[in-house]
Length: 313
Image 1 (cartoon, helix red, strand yellow):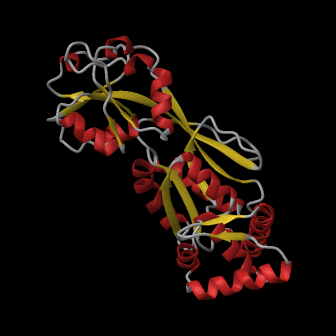
Image 2 (cartoon, one colour; image 1 turned 60 degrees about the vertical axis):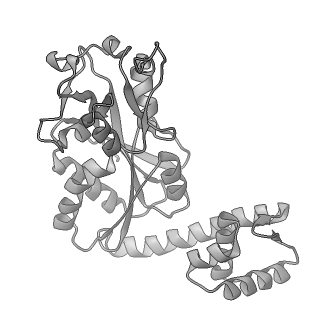
């Protein structure tokens, strides 16, 4: 039994396809197939049921895949312990960020890290929270930047800053004449939201349930337009298709020079989100965690409220 065989087993279980698993492992399909057959013969059980176009995992295979992933995670941790023992700021750091944070934080963060930790190159991934968390737990990522609330066993969280939400609307919209906008005023508007799977969508709806009560002006029919990214929604606002709510860091990135869209704060206490770093408690390079946290603070994002770093983090 070898580590490569365990990697192949985990890949096939994930991809449900021998060809895609081989591509993910950077080996030929015959090499992968022979290695898995060898492991099955050694263990005396079948791990997969081969079908036309798809592979399924047997009951015993499911248990073996879970254990194989644990072994691979332990090996990664051993390797990281060795590297971290030399210098936590030397070696690649795999950093994930959710879609509604990455484009607005990373352009400030990356130069800071290049300056302060030049021997720690970043591998960056943007994705949904659920995907990033799974990749973090499987040691495919070292750190992730996400929005709270978040609570997972074995994961350490360090809150970084609070960020307010603002309203973005076409410059010619009637609400643009107001200095601040009451959330109740959005009940009759076409409020464009991110699609399902984005935690920011859920936060907007929780803070502004009336935002789901938009109409299209045709006989009172109510509907909401959805976009796949905040940038797509920004252009939809510029095209006068409706209004939206953005985190303030996204609203600061003005693509139109103030001519086509404008932003307004909420009246009273604005809805906010809290942004945090998360990493496995077993991750040995705590110096790298602190370097990223300090670089985020040094980025000085204009509209956020930074939180003090608690002792012990």
